[in-house]
Image 1 (cartoon, rainbow, N blue to C red):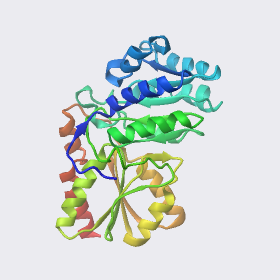
Image 2: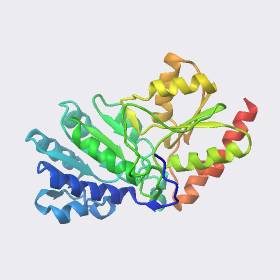
Image 3: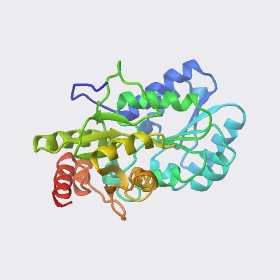
Image 4: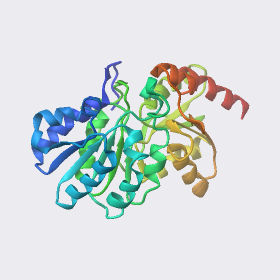
Length: 318
C-alpha cells in the first residue's frame, strides 16, 4: 500500500489530470473556476473540453450560485479556487444555495493551510475544514498525496451531494502505491503499528508524521499512525477508539487551526466514547504569516523535526 520512494508530485496536477479522465467518461461533468485555472490546474479540463469549462472571474460567490444552477439541471459541477476564497468568502452561498437543497456540487479547493506561503494570512485558509464540517450534508475530504487525490476526486464524482476536497499548494511526497492503495471512506488508514501513542493526521502533514514516527521509533517510542482523509462523515471513529484503547494517548496533527478541524473531530469522538488525553497540533488561534513554505511549517511546528521535538517532550512529561 505504501510507496517506498521519495517521489514528489503535485496534488493539483493530479486533480487536473483526473478531471480530464472523468470528463471523457461523463458528459455531465462541468468545471468552474474563479480566474485561477493555472493555479488550480483546472486549465487541463479547459483545454480538453472548453465548452464545459466556465471561468467565472473573481466572483466566487456568483460561481457557487452558478454551480448550484447547473446542478439543478443535472450537471455535476466541479468548482475550484483557493481554499480561503472557496469557503470564507462563499459560506452563505455554500450553506444556503448548495447544502440546504443538497445539490450535487463538488468544491475542490487548492492552496489550503499555511503552505500558501508568501501570500500570507489573507490567502491562508486555516479555518476552512471547520467551516465546511459544520454545514449539514457536506462531505469533507483532505487527501495526502498525488495518488490519493485521484481516487478521492473519482469518489466525489460518484457520490451524490455536496463535497469539499482540500488540496495543498505544495508538491508532496508520494506516500501511497498507485497499484496497491484503495481509498476507503469507511476506515482510517493505519500507516504503522504502535503501542505508546496514536498520531492521527491527514493531508500534507501525513508525510511529516511518518518521518516523525521513524524518529520516535529510533528513540524507543512506538507510534501508531492513522491517516484520516475523510473528516466528515467521520467514519474513522471506531478505528481511532480502538487505537486509543491500546495506546492511551492520542495526538492529532493538521495544517489547519486546532479549532474545528481534524483534532476537534477526534476529541468529539473520544469524549463521547472513550475519554482519552489528546494533544492537538496545528496552527493556534491566530492568523497565518507571510514566508517561505518550509519556514512556515517550521514556525508553526508542523515539520517532522518540530513534531518529533514536541511529541517527545509531551510524552516524557505526561
